Length: 246
Image (cartoon, rainbow, N blue to C red; front, side, top):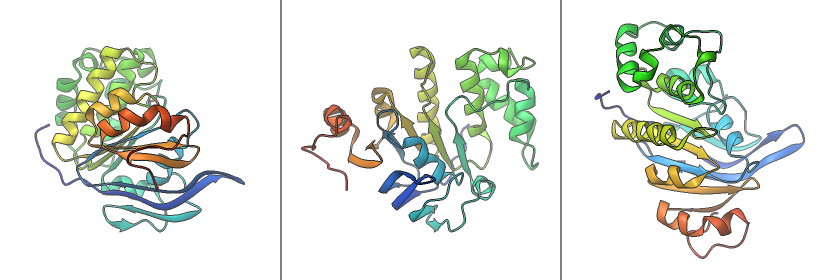
């Protein structure tokens, strides 16, 4: 896992999005520089997952501009963004319960052009638990092991940006710590990472910048230390004394 990569910048400018007549995002601005780790925080229902869906091409914005790697995305197509190096880890583990760990390695490399044996070596070296269970169905793994398996796709060559949705949800603190250490390692290689979290502390420990989303609007943005000092007020929707969101 030592190869350096050129990360992709991520940008939402004046983006609104929703479901039918219900608008969830109200003109938000979010910028993540290439190679940066950013945390998008906020309470349940704030619109964090919707922002990730728009960035990953799974949902079209109703207003505003989306740009990946400096290129404006005019027609959001997930497959095209994946080919550019965008990887999304959805909430709820994102693995197939009826496939084995080894079969997931096949899934991550099905397009060809990737050394599957090398990927297995990298994955099992980083997550030894998966190596000892490589013939097991994903549905029989623990929640932490399933999240490790889901995250393992970020080790595929060509991944330049990683979107993680509620990485820590339902997991033991030790597992959460290990997964966020993996995020730190990816960032050290140059991979851009956007972490969406309801629980702020661990995400802020690996981030270089952060923003707080409340009721579909950015309430606060700044450094992790600024955000940690003000996040309670931001969650409650009160005016911030530092780094107000636009």
